[in-house]
Length: 106
Image (cartoon, rainbow, N blue to C red; front, side, top):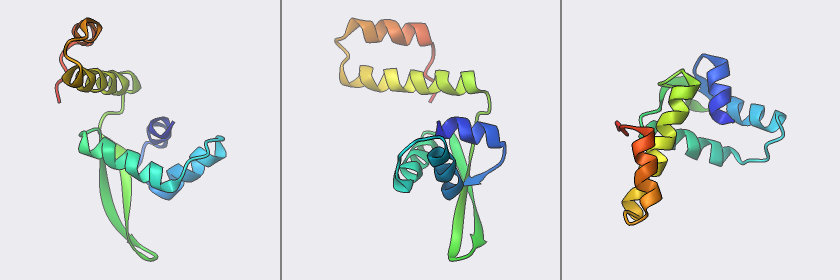
């Protein structure tokens, strides 16, 4: 849902805003979890941030690198399956899933 919020906003957003919108949509999640998720997306090259000064110091505003929802979820699925395959290379279904998803392109 955090990804969909970022896609809908179409502009960089503070973690607090994303967290509040998640709460407004019935998701009971900590703000720390939102921050960790966005940092993970950034490490994976799927999000980026800019820093702005504000009350209390610097604030990170996050945005997605890929704005096409289908493409973004395809890349996430590829990377997820690839990481599972790295852990369990003997599972034939994972090899088939990797072929179906195409190049992981990290």
